[in-house]
Length: 173
Image (cartoon, rainbow, N blue to C red; front, side):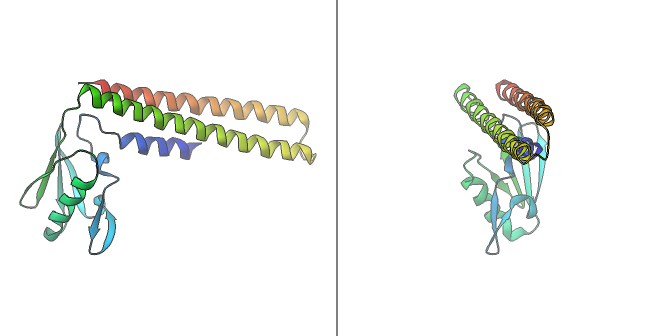
C-alpha cells in the first residue's frame, strides 16, 4: 500500500500546475549517444523563478537533443535556448486546462484506490486460506480482517488528502 501511495505521488507530480517544478520533467527521456536516458541524468534542472525552469546539459552537444526531447514530451512546454542554457517558461493554465488536469488527478487517485482495494482483497484471500488450513482460528481471522480494513481505510484517506492538495494547487491562479 505504501508503494501505491508512492506511485500516486509520482503520477500527481507529473500533472502540471502553473508553477515551475523540476519534477514536471521527470518523465522526459533524452537520446544520449544512442540510448534513452532520463533528462535528470544528462542535465541540471533548476528553478529560475516561480514560472521558469532552466536546464543546463552537462555536455554542450546535448543542448539540441534535450530541447527536442522537451518539445516532444507532450507537456505543452516551449523551451528557448540561450547558449548552453535552456529556459522553459511555464504557460499559464486556462480554466479549461485546469479542469482537465483536475479530472486527470481524480482518475489517478481512483486508480490508486482500486489498487489499494485489490491489495486488501489479496490479503483477505491469504487469511481465509490460512483459516481453512487451520493455521489460525476464526477469531484471529476476524481480527485480521478488521485490522486490514482499518489499514485500507487509512490509506484511502491519504489518497483523498493527496488529491485535495493537488486540486488546490491546480485551482490556484
